[in-house]
Length: 464
Image 1: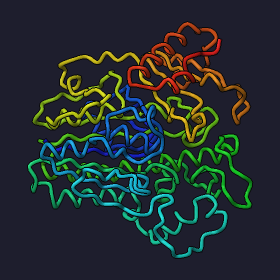
Image 2: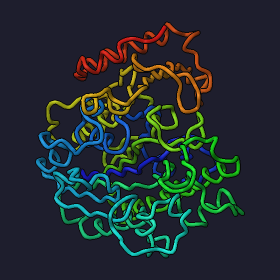
Image 3: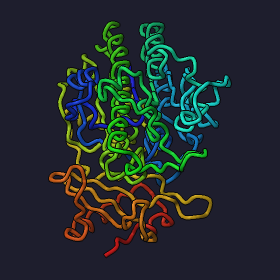
């Protein structure tokens, strides 16, 4: 069996038609979903980009061990385990964080191609004629990197999917079995798809570049520092920001669709599993935020995950209600490949669930940024999210107090997801006993995966 895994960074679950969206064009991924096992309760574990990839490649919960750090060298990772089982392994990536600063995410792969130029990649040096305001919004390095872009095929996701297509053309029938991991940074910021994609969702916009439509960070220029808050944009700018992101989503869908078409043309669906997922979502004004935040509401923590099984497996496409997380994907892939799962792996294969051989009995999932202290000080992670089928608790570290940048008191939050899916009514005071139960399960889970007492002591107590 061949395995193709596609990770599309910062892809919001609720922007896909197969997850209920009715205004954004995602026809290709929706078509894939109709042929897949679609997971309705997939949640992130470690946040954001690099911790998530570490979860994905090691099958462990990175947040209790590390933050934004290189892939651990002393562990057997996914590509290595597959290679030992006779797989040819290939990495195609434009997510430059995985390659820069010796992060080692190419480890175990027989080959890897890096599409250059995303975000702060030190790639191009030629000056551009962009205005100071545009350089402030997008970053001068990024603008240099895309200065030769002329056609849609020059955009990063297009280059990445084209590279994957070319690799398949050269390799699809040359190996007994292969694993192809494709990692594209889109639709991560900056949201700058071709104009025609933006015009699908906000035709007639004449407001220029939106501060916050790019890196939504504090700009080190003479301009007023731009905080990542929705209140800093006008309603028209916020609408346009959402159109930019929606355009990025559709751009990704179009080019993933071309790859899927090539897979079909080659007859690979007969013996190839295809996985599509992301690392987290992004706020587009919800809860007062722009971009990603470690304050993990549904928009960021609840992610898409679909797996199209090989036709030869005769698995009926369906929706799956089981809780799954990125650390589960690694052992699932190894299970599919009939490869040895290295010890210790904390994730659990969900292949028996896909095949209808077992039910998943996981009651909660925990999603958080790194919990490990930084340089002898407390970690800067203030909240941790624990989600059950009905509830979401945003627990607060016991030594934290005060207000956030929106002037709101930093306190635990509890939401009833069935009646309040957008998480607008905090029921922590009214349903304190529910919060206590979820918190207790959260602590037991952290203990079960080996969280240190140094971490646990910061989270053992909930405010009254």
